[in-house]
Length: 563
Ligand SMILES: [Zn+2]
Image (cartoon, rainbow, N blue to C red; front, side, top):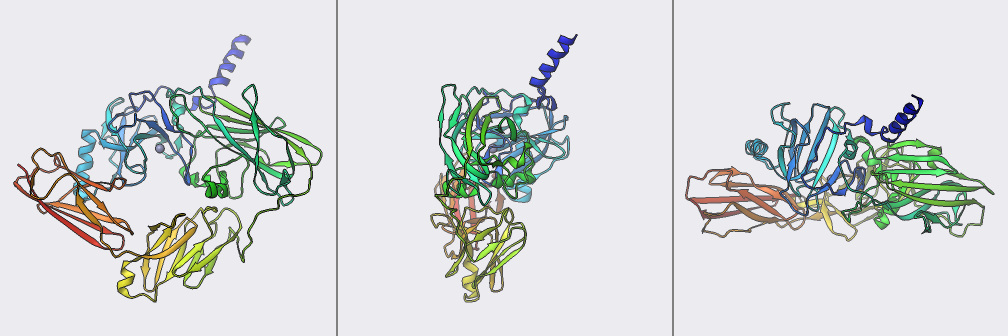
């Protein structure tokens, strides 16, 4: 009896941790090909953690997508950005599955969406059907995989959320099979001197720590000399057996002399906290090198709930004469583990490289609102725009303001206001506030125009300038010509582009009636499907109107024949 009890508790210990909370057989795969991931749950992305898994669809669109269980479609959205065409299906067990970047929906859902699009005369629509209005069965084809929205290649973005709290959970917790026997990859190790007196290898700045691979597969760092309060961080990724994609790791642990100092994983997180990713990574390093260091300690402003355990916020107090053995364990969901050992010696050695901090006349206290009048432009940061205090670098030029640089993250929107009193009404109409990227290419920001001021709200530090767009968008047919017979054509497609401020709205009519044009900004293409409307006239007049973000408008007309 005792033996049985021990055996059972062992089983519970091994399999019981997180899976017992999640149903294991409730969901089938949303695809009928082996699940190969191009992205994992919790993966580090721009300003957010990835809230689902990205399932590869063999580099093509049109792969059937299946309902993972019986349920009811509770939300449908068609958007140019984000998830593109997306379906939300609520299941009786309290979970909602989400399917994003779809090419198109299955016929009965497609019909529902088309009706809505024609009623609202818009391509981008969103609807929350009543429960049981659109029922689906487990294994029913609900859509076809695509590349719509913010997607850079065909794949299915798949999520499992709590239907009530909408909190996303790691889909792999539900027993989906993904082949993975490959250990996570450790690319780099870093040390962060945190207290004023701290230094690592005689350096008061973020310091790279060299390491080598041992015979047993673990990594061993060169001995580190340090003093004061320090933190560690790493750069790494996970790769699965059948794909080259660099995916996010599942769990991270830091042990100091055998004691767990840091333990976090990506079982779930809430959308409300996802932007705090900017405190988990070293944003300065990210802004400078586009590489994400995951910190093993809690930096100021970090409100993430992903931690299972934190000792001293993951920070190590290094004392003179003592040695510390730090173990870093990085795991993927399948349990493959990469281990690194970092020996630290407490030694107060003279500083060779002093803190590289540029002091300016403006010190931002993150908790307080901060207002700057730069002459010609004003910048207002509400309280808690930033995670931490810092010396902000502000510069102005002719109709331009540079607000520090891209190495400091903003958690909240701040406002930039330009004085435009020197411009005429006609000029102001065609002007807008543009953000310049690192290569000084301008992009439109939503500009609120009131009297002699232009204002924009943004969460990106960097350079902003007043720009002027005088050229209307261009429209040209892609697959047809004027006065052509189009009997065997399934669709019409046109190319629409704008030189500077970007396309704001577009619309099209056929013989005076509104028609749906699906827009794909990635290819500058709008497409009409001839199945949408039955044409009773032989001679057809197409009219397409496109307006840019400052109101410059162009209209294209064409006549074609069809019977
Ligand atoms: Zn995704």
